[in-house]
Amino acid sequence: MKKLLIAGILAAVSGYVYAQAPAVETKAAPAPASGIKVEKIVTAASVENKEPVDETSAFDKDTVKVYTWTKITAAATPAKIWHVYYFNEKKAAEVELQIGGSPWRVWSAKNVRPGNWKVEVTDENGAVLAAAVFTVTENPKAEAPTTP
Image 1 (cartoon, one colour):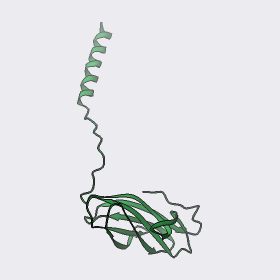
Image 2 (cartoon, rainbow, N blue to C red):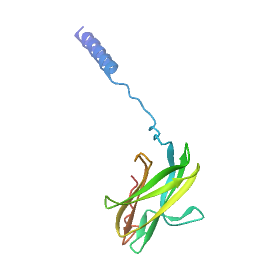
Image 3 (cartoon, rainbow, N blue to C red):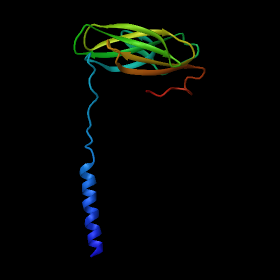
Image 4 (tube, rainbow, N blue to C red):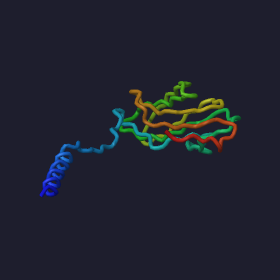
């Protein structure tokens, strides 16, 4: 009889705990107010015919310039985005880019030196839409960074 009573109490308590657990709600990330979406962002050695050439996230120490190429879709155009460059976690440059249609491909170039770099794509409100990381190093294959 005690076993039955204990089992009944445990069932009642576990049902109560289950009923009290908050519902887990999954939501898609909210779209930025700007209506701008980054479809693709890459760093590359150059850009030719509006396409990145030699995409990589690890550059040799002799690299002078790195290109950040971005494909954008936008609910309304014209619009603006920024490529914000960080060198060893400190802001190094901001480049304003015009979006004239959707989809639209834009790129910027930054003179670089050895170290860790990050490029954030931001909208007119300063919201970060996407980011890419890259390194300029002695041995680029050994120290390729991870994406954020």
